Image (cartoon, rainbow, N blue to C red; front, side, top):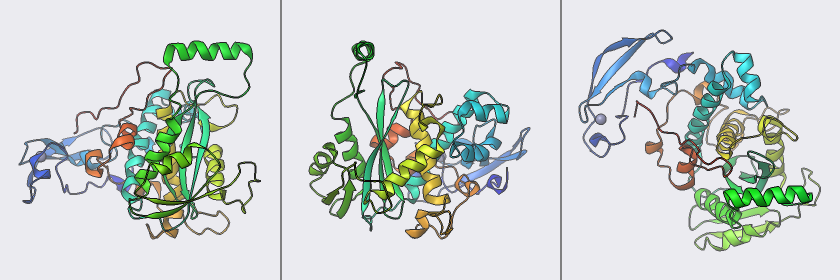
Length: 364
Ligand SMILES: [Zn+2]
């Protein structure tokens, strides 16, 4: 661990229910000794909140809180955007696949909040491109779209998921299996794409603004826009049959699709590392979004900095160490709706009946 482990002075009580959060008076806490541990940093400062009496420590404010193998977070971040599968990473790092999975969920949650903190809150100043990135969870019988909203700058403003019914050519046996699975687990909502695209546009585009939105001819997109009456859309469609060159108006999202497929093992064609759960895929997209927006150059040849720099959100490319420096708390970032469900791991997978929902342990 590098300088990310320097304990910052606490500036708020980590207890979301603490009075000091609503109180206008200055927050008061006191130092309460140290405890030692068998990994760096060895000595941890302990604190006590005067308002709620909660004990906490400098580690409470570190992204490494309650992780036994926090040293793996940074290398894991890079592996996850370099197309490695969980099993492969686990073998290389000499830990179990479960450890890698857990750390990757931890990174995903952090990245969701990190992007929320940095993304622009005013109306996007550039045309946006919307597209659904087709992939699947659990088996080929459960396809879903990752809806991506990307600017001309290549900045990814947001994403979410929409479950789909398996379609296209199927053999009679496959058609029968689909009906058995749907009988057992229920059929995906036929309105899912419209609902989720509406959620995504509502989240990224503030009311009262005017936006140029480019997409293919998906019928659910205009339906979603019509429901957002307090926003004005200039919708420009391009046929998905048009060749995918840099001249194509959908180029920013086509490139994002390509990069996402190229850098994530779970989206490679014919992969055996596909996502068992949509939730896991969403955490990985969150990591990918942070890498794409704040770390990776827009053009590898020109080395012109990441998209967030082009938008003036950051002054230079960030490194993973900076991204992981400070722990972010969901209640302080004000997330709600789909984002909150995604953060807490509540996006269900039909074919798995009991999906575990993340609950913050001990520290908050
Ligand atoms: Zn408190």
